[in-house]
Image 1 (tube, rainbow, N blue to C red):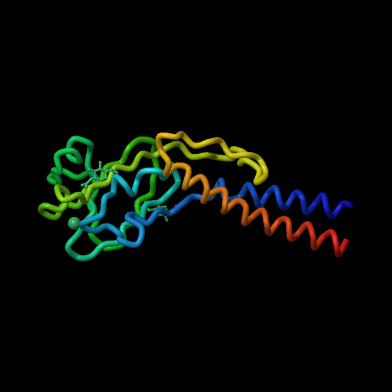
Image 2 (cartoon, protein in one colour):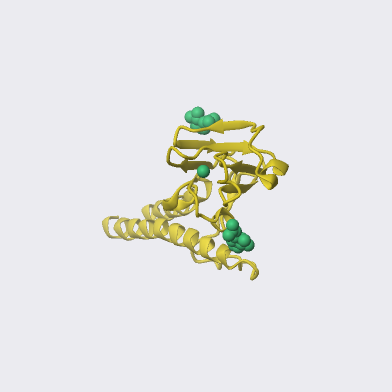
Length: 174
Ligand SMILES: *[C@@H]1O[C@H](CO)[C@@H](O)[C@H](O)[C@H]1NC(C)=O
Ligand SMILES: *[C@@H]1O[C@H](CO)[C@@H](O)[C@H](O)[C@H]1NC(C)=O
Ligand SMILES: [Cu+2]
């Protein structure tokens, strides 16, 4: 009996783990940081938090500049607060607020190589919903939220399954 309680505890811990992991987002997914990608679309439905990382992968014709909102809006790369061109740039999200990126190569920002990432506060040790509990219904005006919530739920479920397997093993052995 005791081992089943232990196993149940492990299940709970495993289910809670994904909620506290920092996430690395590859900007643009497989397309990377490139011309012809709509980064407004890429951002929508994703949740970025302090502690997460953005990874930009790009070819030699591109760079990454961190700019303020007016320069993001106006595609002005003349006064970036930070600039990178090593073709694999990792940006730590260290504070709440929107961080703005543009490609400073002539014409690229106007062509769509611009990215505004809204960063939310980190979730420290907030309890995650248990796999059996219904997840909060996503807002109907953003169906992509539903998709990411679903994939998170799936991730939690797969951890949960490992836990369930453990319960069974403990049950048989103990
Ligand atoms: C990117 O997609 C959004 C809708 O998600 C649209 O409003 C916007 O015009 C698109 N941007 C470009 C440069 O095509
Ligand atoms: C980002 O954070 C990691 C670990 O927390 C650290 O090793 C790395 O140097 C940081 N990168 C930058 C650009 O601050
Ligand atoms: Cu570019």
